[in-house]
Length: 168
Image (cartoon, rainbow, N blue to C red):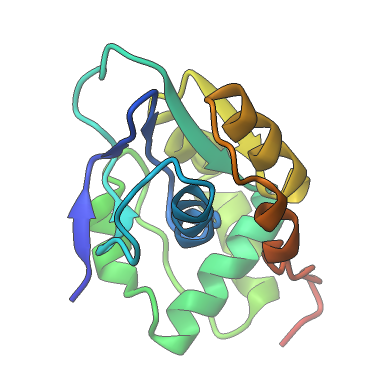
Protein backbone atom coordinates (compact mmCIF):
# COMPACT_ATOMS: atom_id res chain seq x y z
CA UNK A 1 0.00 0.00 0.00
CA UNK A 2 1.28 3.43 -0.90
CA UNK A 3 1.89 6.12 1.66
CA UNK A 4 -0.20 9.27 1.33
CA UNK A 5 1.08 12.67 2.48
CA UNK A 6 -0.24 16.19 2.09
CA UNK A 7 3.05 17.38 0.63
CA UNK A 8 6.79 16.89 0.63
CA UNK A 9 8.69 19.71 2.30
CA UNK A 10 11.99 20.40 0.56
CA UNK A 11 14.40 22.96 2.06
CA UNK A 12 13.12 25.84 -0.12
CA UNK A 13 9.61 24.79 -1.15
CA UNK A 14 6.74 22.38 -0.65
CA UNK A 15 5.60 19.96 -3.36
CA UNK A 16 2.19 18.35 -3.77
CA UNK A 17 0.45 17.16 -6.93
CA UNK A 18 -2.53 15.18 -8.10
CA UNK A 19 -1.95 11.53 -9.05
CA UNK A 20 -0.76 10.81 -12.60
CA UNK A 21 1.13 14.12 -13.00
CA UNK A 22 4.75 12.86 -13.01
CA UNK A 23 4.94 13.11 -9.22
CA UNK A 24 7.32 10.16 -8.83
CA UNK A 25 9.44 11.48 -11.71
CA UNK A 26 9.74 14.90 -10.03
CA UNK A 27 10.69 13.37 -6.67
CA UNK A 28 13.41 11.30 -8.39
CA UNK A 29 14.71 14.38 -10.24
CA UNK A 30 14.84 16.36 -6.98
CA UNK A 31 16.95 13.61 -5.46
CA UNK A 32 19.29 13.46 -8.47
CA UNK A 33 19.60 17.26 -8.54
CA UNK A 34 20.65 17.28 -4.89
CA UNK A 35 17.53 19.06 -3.63
CA UNK A 36 16.14 16.09 -1.71
CA UNK A 37 18.45 13.69 0.09
CA UNK A 38 16.22 10.61 0.42
CA UNK A 39 16.10 8.36 -2.63
CA UNK A 40 12.98 6.30 -3.38
CA UNK A 41 10.57 8.36 -1.33
CA UNK A 42 7.66 6.22 -0.12
CA UNK A 43 5.25 9.06 -0.96
CA UNK A 44 3.56 8.32 -4.26
CA UNK A 45 0.21 9.99 -3.77
CA UNK A 46 -0.37 13.42 -2.28
CA UNK A 47 -3.57 14.32 -0.51
CA UNK A 48 -4.67 17.93 -1.08
CA UNK A 49 -3.54 19.89 2.00
CA UNK A 50 -6.34 20.88 4.36
CA UNK A 51 -4.77 24.27 5.09
CA UNK A 52 -2.32 26.69 3.55
CA UNK A 53 1.31 25.67 4.00
CA UNK A 54 2.43 29.28 4.39
CA UNK A 55 5.45 28.86 2.11
CA UNK A 56 6.05 28.41 -1.59
CA UNK A 57 4.28 25.31 -2.96
CA UNK A 58 4.94 23.78 -6.38
CA UNK A 59 2.50 21.47 -8.12
CA UNK A 60 2.56 19.71 -11.47
CA UNK A 61 -0.50 19.87 -13.69
CA UNK A 62 -1.33 18.07 -16.89
CA UNK A 63 -3.52 18.84 -19.88
CA UNK A 64 -7.01 17.77 -18.72
CA UNK A 65 -7.56 15.42 -21.64
CA UNK A 66 -4.21 13.66 -21.21
CA UNK A 67 -4.77 13.54 -17.45
CA UNK A 68 -8.18 11.89 -17.89
CA UNK A 69 -6.54 9.39 -20.26
CA UNK A 70 -3.87 8.58 -17.71
CA UNK A 71 -6.47 8.20 -14.95
CA UNK A 72 -8.57 5.93 -17.14
CA UNK A 73 -5.50 3.81 -17.89
CA UNK A 74 -4.55 3.70 -14.19
CA UNK A 75 -8.03 2.67 -13.16
CA UNK A 76 -8.41 0.02 -15.88
CA UNK A 77 -5.00 -1.48 -15.04
CA UNK A 78 -5.71 -1.46 -11.30
CA UNK A 79 -2.68 0.75 -10.54
CA UNK A 80 -4.92 3.51 -9.19
CA UNK A 81 -8.06 2.22 -7.47
CA UNK A 82 -11.04 4.39 -8.43
CA UNK A 83 -12.62 4.24 -4.97
CA UNK A 84 -9.38 5.35 -3.32
CA UNK A 85 -8.96 8.18 -5.81
CA UNK A 86 -12.48 9.46 -5.17
CA UNK A 87 -11.81 9.38 -1.40
CA UNK A 88 -8.44 11.08 -1.83
CA UNK A 89 -9.74 13.98 -3.88
CA UNK A 90 -12.93 14.81 -2.04
CA UNK A 91 -13.32 18.12 -3.92
CA UNK A 92 -14.51 16.26 -6.99
CA UNK A 93 -17.73 14.64 -7.93
CA UNK A 94 -17.04 10.90 -7.86
CA UNK A 95 -15.58 9.73 -11.14
CA UNK A 96 -17.19 6.65 -12.63
CA UNK A 97 -15.44 4.23 -14.92
CA UNK A 98 -16.87 3.42 -18.33
CA UNK A 99 -16.23 0.49 -20.67
CA UNK A 100 -14.05 2.55 -22.97
CA UNK A 101 -12.15 5.83 -22.96
CA UNK A 102 -14.65 7.61 -25.20
CA UNK A 103 -17.52 6.72 -22.87
CA UNK A 104 -15.47 7.80 -19.86
CA UNK A 105 -14.72 11.23 -21.37
CA UNK A 106 -18.33 11.76 -22.44
CA UNK A 107 -19.55 10.79 -18.96
CA UNK A 108 -17.03 13.19 -17.39
CA UNK A 109 -18.13 16.06 -19.66
CA UNK A 110 -21.78 15.43 -18.87
CA UNK A 111 -21.57 14.76 -15.13
CA UNK A 112 -18.59 16.68 -13.77
CA UNK A 113 -17.20 19.30 -16.14
CA UNK A 114 -14.55 21.52 -14.56
CA UNK A 115 -13.60 18.98 -11.90
CA UNK A 116 -10.06 18.58 -13.26
CA UNK A 117 -9.34 22.25 -12.54
CA UNK A 118 -10.89 21.95 -9.08
CA UNK A 119 -8.71 18.92 -8.34
CA UNK A 120 -5.52 20.67 -9.44
CA UNK A 121 -6.48 23.82 -7.48
CA UNK A 122 -7.09 21.78 -4.32
CA UNK A 123 -3.31 21.32 -3.96
CA UNK A 124 -3.00 25.07 -3.26
CA UNK A 125 0.03 25.72 -5.46
CA UNK A 126 1.96 28.97 -5.50
CA UNK A 127 3.13 27.97 -8.96
CA UNK A 128 2.67 25.06 -11.35
CA UNK A 129 4.72 23.21 -13.91
CA UNK A 130 2.95 21.53 -16.81
CA UNK A 131 3.84 17.90 -17.56
CA UNK A 132 3.99 18.93 -21.20
CA UNK A 133 6.91 21.28 -20.36
CA UNK A 134 9.07 18.64 -18.69
CA UNK A 135 11.99 18.25 -18.30
CA UNK A 136 12.91 21.87 -19.10
CA UNK A 137 10.48 23.56 -16.71
CA UNK A 138 11.61 21.35 -13.83
CA UNK A 139 15.25 22.09 -14.60
CA UNK A 140 14.63 25.86 -14.62
CA UNK A 141 12.64 25.67 -11.39
CA UNK A 142 15.27 23.60 -9.60
CA UNK A 143 18.07 25.93 -10.75
CA UNK A 144 16.07 28.82 -9.27
CA UNK A 145 15.95 26.84 -6.00
CA UNK A 146 19.74 26.38 -5.96
CA UNK A 147 20.09 22.89 -7.44
CA UNK A 148 23.55 22.15 -8.85
CA UNK A 149 23.18 18.79 -10.63
CA UNK A 150 20.52 19.65 -13.22
CA UNK A 151 22.15 18.20 -16.36
CA UNK A 152 20.83 14.76 -15.37
CA UNK A 153 17.26 16.04 -15.50
CA UNK A 154 17.25 16.34 -19.30
CA UNK A 155 18.00 12.63 -19.63
CA UNK A 156 15.01 11.67 -17.51
CA UNK A 157 12.10 13.18 -19.43
CA UNK A 158 8.83 11.42 -18.52
CA UNK A 159 6.79 9.76 -21.21
CA UNK A 160 3.56 11.63 -21.95
CA UNK A 161 1.14 9.48 -23.93
CA UNK A 162 -1.35 11.19 -26.22
CA UNK A 163 -4.95 10.03 -25.93
CA UNK A 164 -7.59 9.75 -28.61
CA UNK A 165 -11.34 9.69 -28.08
CA UNK A 166 -11.73 6.70 -30.36
CA UNK A 167 -9.33 4.63 -28.23
CA UNK A 168 -11.05 1.46 -27.01
